[in-house]
Image (cartoon, rainbow, N blue to C red; front, top):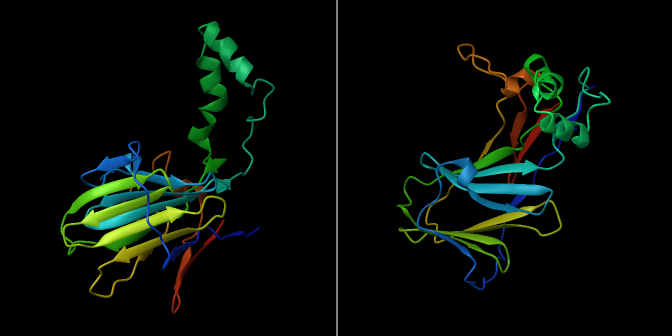
Length: 218
């Protein structure tokens, strides 16, 4: 069966308001260059990580309900419970846990969490990042560059949508939508945690007048 996954919505916003500083806000002098140290935004369903990848500002986007839930043989054993795992730990015999619940992933790719994609903005002409702040009062991330450009972005508290706004931009720019890499290049070696093991075809990215849409067959 072919399933089309509609993933994420992020909009340019004209109405990001003033934030109130708090002594508990997060402050940095630069954006992280690693996704796992990025500024986190989210509401339990939609999430965004704000960081820098090479000369690009990157929004790594995801949803909590994006999963490949194809069945895996042997995964629904009667031992599949927290109490049984605790029992094995107390017995100092963890090997059966690995054989039942880790080893099958060496043979099969799913069930597995799958990513949503990313937005990227070319910032190489914007100067250096001079400040990054995550306001706890309204969960807004603000990034300032030495050129005077300012980013303000947040994820809605209850709806699966997010907004971003750039200030002091003097030239046109276009965000780039990055799809997950579900197919490897011919010269790349496949690893056990590669998305390519899921067997998806490349998703289709379509550019409209005021929109970019990504549809992924699953």
